[in-house]
Every structure is written in structure tokens, then in C-alpha cells.
Image (cartoon, rainbow, N blue to C red; front, side):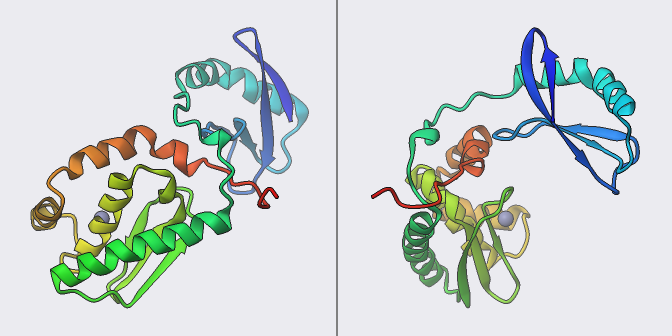
Length: 196
Ligand SMILES: [Zn+2]
């Protein structure tokens, strides 16, 4: 790790060595220190040079990085609690939507993905990100309805969106909420144990 002066502010920059990178690249993700990925045998001098090359870009990225607003850092929800609650709430909505659409859910599982909210396979298997329990109810509800609608329409064409709209006329608000705040929820790090 290096501490880099970014616009007068010390910033921890993690150095990761990877065989899959030619030269170097910098990755900035919310909730994680910025990371410089270099080739396995990069020397200190090469790392210094890579940092110098990316410094201006890094400064801009950190300045415009969105600030969290949901206050999730104060939350004490563990992954086990979150998964249990997600499973209960999501399966209730999924089953009633499936009944309304006349489709069948073969399997419903909770996952811990860093980049997606839900998925639907052609076998009728649905999976959802347990972190959806951190979202407002309408947003969780929309994601579930979205995936159940895929059991009837396996694509993102007009027929699919018409179906979603017929089930949840205000779905666009939930979609917009996910665009604005979804990253905060994906970055939520649950405590490892329940506080007694
Ligand atoms: Zn979809």
C-alpha cells in the first residue's frame, strides 16, 4: 500500500499484482480504497511512475465519487439476519406475483452479489441479492416483480416492460432509486456477529 498525496489529502492506494494486467490500471470503487493493479514483477520505480501517470485522473475520480446518504454505516444487520428477512419478504411477493401471472417458480435463492439485484434462469430459478432488504419496500418489490415477469417474457423487449408496467405502474421510480442509491446498498458490509 502507498499513501498518495491527492490534492493535499493523503489517500491510501492499494497495490495489487496481477498476471492479467499489462502495464497498469487504477480501479476506484465505493467502499474500497482505490487500487492500482500492476503486473507481477513491477518495480517500485514503475509503481511510482504509474501513480504519477494516473494522479490527475485519480484526483478527479475521488472528487466526483458520490457520497453515501442512506446512513447504512450505522446499521448492525448481519448477513444471516439480512438473508433470512430477504428470503421471507421476497418469497411472499414472488409467489403472489407468480400466481397472478400464471408462471411457476422452481427455485428461489438469496445471493450475495456485488453487482446485481436478481436473476432468472430459463429453468424457472430465481435468485436475489439479499442486500435488497436495505432498500425501500417499493424497490425490493419492483426487483422481485421484474424477475418474476422474466418467467413469462425472457428478454428486455417492449413486451417485457409492458408486463412490468401492468403489474407495477410506478416501476420507473424504483428503477431510478436503484440508479441513484443502489451502489450504497451493494457496498454494505454486514458485521460478522450479532451484537449481544
Ligand atoms: Zn431483467
